[in-house]
Length: 319
Ligand SMILES: C/C(=N\NC(=N)NO)c1ccc(NC(=O)Nc2ccc(/C(C)=N/N/C(N)=N/O)cc2)cc1
Image 1: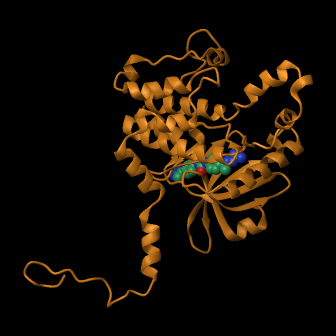
Image 2: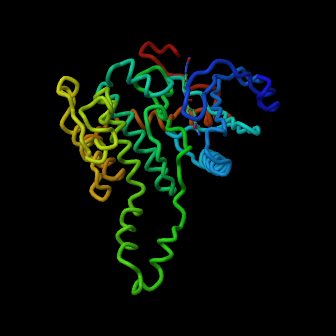
């Protein structure tokens, strides 16, 4: 506890590690004043090759975390740093990481996978509309709000995220094209698809949720993972995929397309037949925009007449 920033120690009691990541760990903590549980992500700076990179990344990430506002994106409460670490205080997602949920259940029921996938799509659609690419969507970075299957999910870890600024390319295309080399235009088409990397990752995430195993893995066949990905080679093992609907498989197949210009976009995925499921959409919106918050606001106002309305029963008694 001694190496923790004093302010952090004064405000929070850090306890056991609840998650680990490549560049840090997540600890369960209690806000001393309220005994409320929070999560604290500790990122050690030495993991980054250069100090410059670390500073840029963490401030970018903190900027993004503090700027975004969507029900399926993690919310931060506090941020501290010392010479060697960053400390991000976040809401505690009681259900932990999607990674462990899928592992413990072998594979998710299709309607649960659909509910989670819809929320991930909504979160990524929000990021993209704000010019943010996540670039590191994976089961460890999808958190669940409760131990229940039907629950809110939140995307976290914006360590690899990038904010799409006005690029040199855009400025170049404003001038006269007459003297520009062809590759400036063809390369352009690839950089124009940088958002598509998140669509690919969502395809991998959906594959893992439905199939219970990853589409690309070193233990499959003789090709390296990189080659499997570059070739877009994956197998839907019948024993695992037999009960998965054709529509769900179609979403996966249209996202795991090697050519980004041919890959299904986030917008198109949201319009896919598999997601036009009223029951799921109602559940998702109830979780994302709980009516409770508004009702609480109403009850704060002076009740117009004497308290809750009295309902008459058939026999005339008041309830
Ligand atoms: C309830 C629970 N566990 N319950 C229990 N009793 N466990 O024993 C639990 C809850 C949450 C988590 N994970 C979790 O919260 N991850 C997480 C990952 C990344 C980030 C961020 C912002 N990253 N940013 C960077 N730059 N990263 O490198 C934030 C949170 C794990 C277990």
